[in-house]
Image (tube, rainbow, N blue to C red; front, side, top):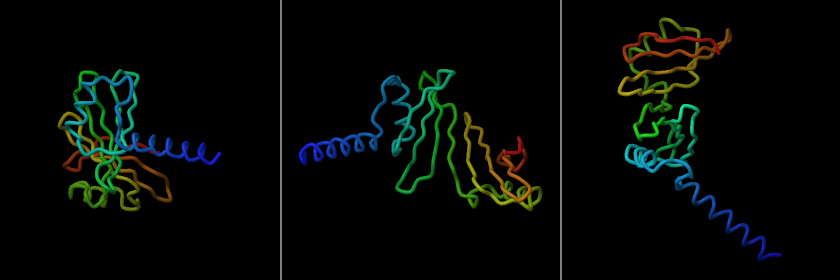
Length: 149
């Protein structure tokens, strides 16, 4: 019985080790995996998902205490979009200024940097006693989209 428990424990640890290395999942084309590994070579805790449109969504972290990131990759291996959680202090000054001007009573709950084919935007989740908002800005602080959560 002790041997069985020990063997199951070793098998479990081996499985965790393989998952932590971001082993290639079945069904994801090699061209997609290669494109991801080229652009995000230090990615850890990689999780793949095929989307309804045929593209692939990859969730991952980079570094020891990396923030959550996502990449969206076409079946041909082109990175379509990259989303990265960032600290509110890393937002561009123009976005911070707009937040102070337009959303003074709100607190920044989460912030993301979104790169879609070279066009960068910032998405900010705001919280207040009046309700939650999700606002998307361009790099110059212009509001692109706003919605209540």
